[in-house]
Image (cartoon, rainbow, N blue to C red; front, side):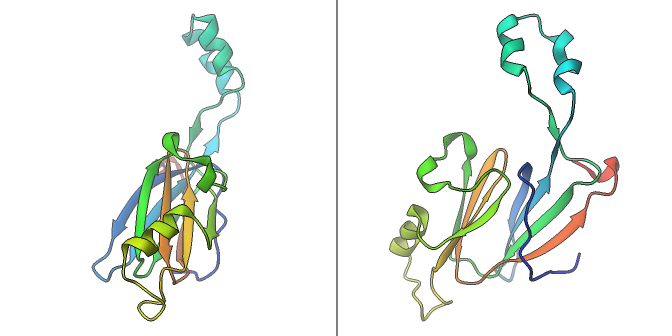
Length: 163
């Protein structure tokens, strides 16, 4: 997959597939887009016998990664810090982006924390200037850096290379 310097709009439904660090200090966040299946509730209706469960599921659909969805790698060159938060416990005060969306923020609680806890300043690595946030269906990844990310995008061509 070749790098693309452009911003990539990640679909609102996406799963975090992994976070890894390369030997050169590059942080790679791997996100797999997903799609809500249609008519899932009707298919599941016969598997539930509890009326409360049925009511809770009404309108729900299974969200899976399959043909037509993309795998997106977000590459951060020498980030100052990052964290992964279970989406269930995230505070709404610092989470303005919808699930799956990649956004950047010049002022957040996490960014303030990283600035306070590190000695990185504008003269070293360009400082801890901005937080990039990727909100997936299950996790939120926050990265503090001075360097904008690059992207590698790979289409999921068929079910065999889907999640």
